[in-house]
Image (cartoon, rainbow, N blue to C red; front, top):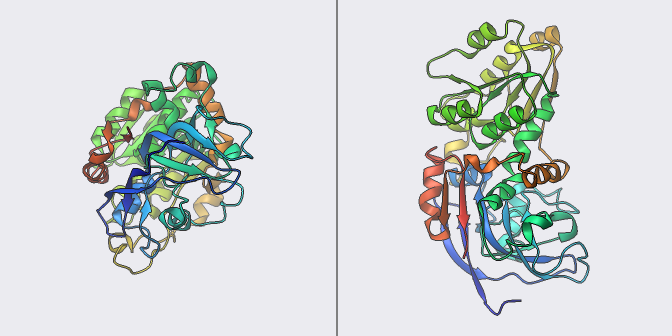
Length: 380
């Protein structure tokens, strides 16, 4: 293990619209299943932006930000058998084996208090990953051999494979997507863009993306999707002109609610999805907002409630498959990593900026204002 005693990390202290660059102790092996990773890259994710905007309560702050990272193993516990020192790995945005019952805030709160600023706190120079045999993804050997000491463009692809790429791919699965299906995707955030990319990779016959962000709609159009700008078009009639019977699949990637938090849109999106989905088709919804308490850290988001109003008769008449839930990256990421290794997928195409850690506060603000699609932090 390196003799270095401290690391630099991006932390949140409970104040909306503020993150800090902090100096913290390097984590140590606490359990035999642990691994210590020296982080090379970490991504700013949607949950980070929600935290930055004040979604979570502040009673367990401060915590280290970040949900996905790529780096090199520098130390392993005695029970770690699947990995060795020097291996380049991806740290996913989820953990397993005993931590899955904890809330996001609790997982993040494990951070500075008990040095679990780990799998859900990856924007740090080093992280401790519990249950490393199950919670790390190896970079394919042919790519890792020559890349252990450097960061490449391909590493950006691997970084996203267990996070937004897996979530966008899994969002389609929730809708029951099959090759040849037409699909409408609501929300052009990073996950929505990855859902578009995944649909095209998987052989969709036609992909619509509905949002009001012209720059992101332009990205989707470049990928092969048909953009629908909510500020100028009504999505139902425009889609039904192209698909008179409706699309086979509709997917809500919860980007529109995040972008228009001063205007309730949850009901409207689900109503639109019901209206444009073909009889017997599928509706998938990945992610949602939850009720937040009345605290100083949550004021902009208190009105976002998890209660929707929907005419059940519309669903009953069309009889679609409707599924919603959290995507388990463990079921998807290995396939995506293999696709990247074979040159069949390049999810990093949506990365808008690669920054140094000391630039994080500035780029959190930019990402919150939708001036960035995906930001990656580089650690020395």
